[in-house]
Length: 530
Ligand code: TEU
Image 1 (spheres, rainbow, N blue to C red):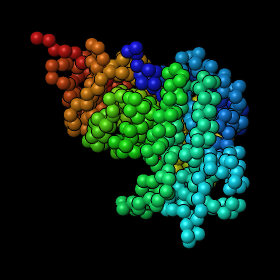
Image 2: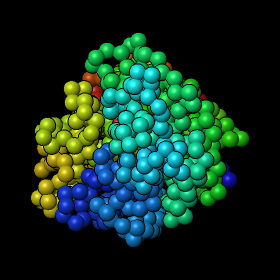
Image 3: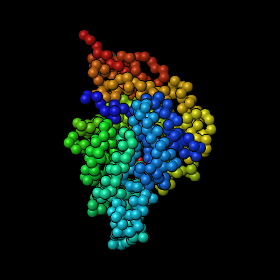
């Protein structure tokens, strides 16, 4: 039919379960906590909830080290809690997306325990084991994302195993058919329980070049960059065989109805777009697009990025936009609240599926965490790089009670220091708050199909402004975003005049043909007849 699928017209909201709501007083968020906050989630006006990993895990990388792919981590609850949450979300018309981590497991996973036991174990080949180089060192120069060699020596069997992330996150061997089948069974398990899709962690990593050649050195590397960036990940990521596996995952998902696959993929446009697959052999529905995070906040650069990204999509592709995550700095920390509102308006009005990160709807800004409270393994290993991820993982500030009503105990990470004034309850009461602003834009997306599914025309660059038209049937809207600090004339296309102002990032605005400093506007366009 002509109806766009839910994952194309809808908005995804990312929940980081450890930091959403604690229900049992251990300072760590959990599934029952999320259930308690369902009214809030539904009232936001989003369409789908993506939960960062909730599976059994020793938490070396806070759930991205899975020890049982079909078991719920006891800190978060149990399968009954999961089933209830899934049902309650569905009752409210919301979809549930889980986080699948197929590239690596925890070193505590029984598969790895078996694999490391003996070279002859049937699960040996489920992971990536290699003999040392002739000098006894690691098999090649691959570097872990968290610093140091990607190879760890294991005395027991006298070989190295590969880990693209922590040594407690050994990489699985997707060339092994039994491993593939086991992971497809995991997908079936959750689909059969009613899950509506997966966000697939580092999908572009899952297959490595069979000969394990050295990666080329990065000529642009400087000591202020991560150690990982020293080499280009040419042979350790984005191998052709990984596309065939993504296509197989898609075939599996398509045996159900209306499921979505989202791939976490960091690549330049041309190679990124290949993860849509072809019309005959589709891969993921949404290869996550992080370019709003990666591009400097400057109109010219953003304009170029947006047009290049949209042009890079194949005809059967659908765009998507991410502005924050549990890995990236918070948008309000980068830009301050006035521009964070403009950024959020952009996220929610560009053509494509937006993913909104928990807490960004409150414009939580810079959170400085005392060194002795840092928990992020990446920050602990590479403290000087200033790329710590805990700053965007602090607990949701709900109200004015102890610990911002997140928990009855000291939370696992400190709250944003301005929580007594920046919290859900106080923003509920203030119609001018970020929370009300985000809800208004989300409600507008629902009311105006032009924003959710309409065509988009990016207007030419004009000083500090990014402007685009969105059209659907007879609806015709103009979004104008002023990234600068002076006012400009509205760039209304010839033959039209500015009609109703449907939204502004400011509470009070002058009603005229200009856009104010630090303002974003959504305007209805009216044809000038005669
Ligand atoms: O992140 C993948 C990834 O590429 C990270 O290296 C990311 O670039 C880095 O965290 C930014 O500082 C995913 C998850 O989102 C992340 O939380 C996990 O740690 C990682 O995979 C390993 O599973």
